[in-house]
Length: 334
Image 1 (cartoon, rainbow, N blue to C red):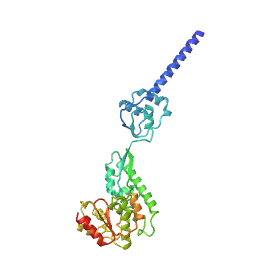
Image 2: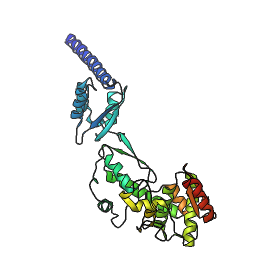
Image 3: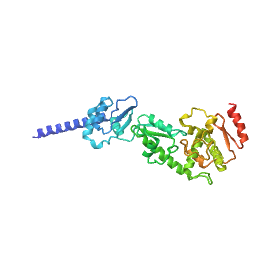
Image 4: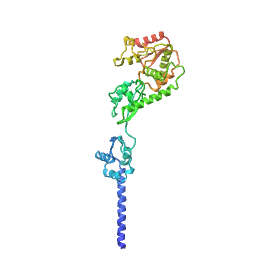
């Protein structure tokens, strides 16, 4: 009887040792580096479970020990994160456990979409339509239909979207990026309007948005924005027409082919500030924060005119005579 007990004890010890060794080997397979030599994209399909994902990764050769991960799913399901659909970047040296944790995280691959300051809403929509891996929900819709989807159907869209670089992941809707840009512009405009100078010739924040779009389109030199805004502000105060070329171009729309003629300057469009009094009816571009700030805090001075030098900056003049001399110098001679 004692001999039998000893034999059983030996068998139990051997079984325990074998089980421990097997468990350690199993854990070592889970901790082993995955088989990728460079960053590799993998997409978790919507609704996919761990068995499907493990099988796909094994088929691709990423996971060498498929059995170890299928066993993990069976024995320790509570330790596994919920898989999140999306693209993930698998990195060399990452363990199998780290891979599974990644696929349940928020670290999906994202892509940049840059909307420069001074672009029009039309240009922004073209960029959205061309962006890869977006869900193009607004493609083919009119501007009015897009604004209705954004619950802003009473607005003209121009100017209402903040220019910046936005990041998105595969499958995100272009409508969501538009919503982000819209809400950011609304918040920025409200914030900037609160800092406005007293006695501005502007009725409300929307007029500041319109003026900021003119400032944005008139100069590529950041330091000039307050001076440009100052000229426009003084002209508005004195009842002078703004006479800014970008409004003519915007009013021409697709007819603009790179040059403005004398006839274009005389054409009575709603946006031609050589013809209309005051501001145009809507913004003509997407202004950034600096242009918005310049519109509500214009630089003081006496200049009423400016002309492009040809290097991205402008010559500012106080009198029409000085301005005409500058035009001769910088425009006609060139």
